[in-house]
Length: 248
Ligand SMILES: [Zn+2]
Image (cartoon, rainbow, N blue to C red; front, side):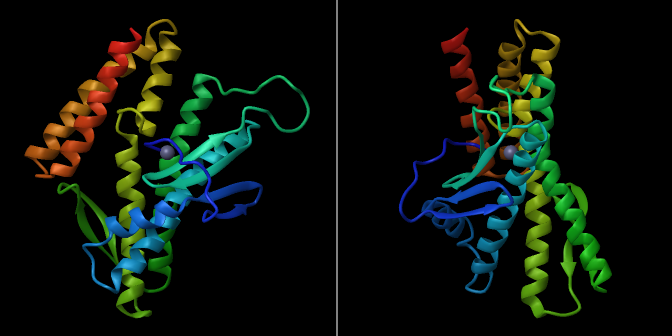
């Protein structure tokens, strides 16, 4: 969850999973298409399906964790990713407003990335059980993980589909755990520090976000040679610095 949700439009796709309402803004498909536009005509539609499934599973992790604590939520897939928005009113009986404590917030934040990791494990198990094979590739250039799935049937498309699912669910999970606002890892850091230091924890977590964001931006530029990562984390570090300036 990076940016605010866009307001509903008449072109939104709406459905629900169990009792959890899901809304997909039309810009979601456009941005997914742009992110996959370096692929060929075969892989672009596969990529869009993979992005849709993966972000939905991540947000479902958050939504189920909210539900575990008795809080209804809705999922919005928007231009820059997904968002799980809790309802301010509790369900069931009782009319005191339910709001998760810092420890519960940490579980809710972790549930997104770990839903993705669990899904990746499921994909690995399905690949192995189907008689396919898993090849190791280097995530971020230096973390060896079995992320390439070769399926014995379904042609090249199925292998590409399974490989993309593995890669996206593991990569985005790790990415989201980085301790930078407003990524899930930034929320975890904030709530962990607030637990130990209720008075000053939020301010300290913004400093963690500034420093970690700057270090990741530099590492992205120098080690991974990615201008995109450098720009994104530089921007997030700067936003955290601005929050520090305006609030403290
Ligand atoms: Zn998340």
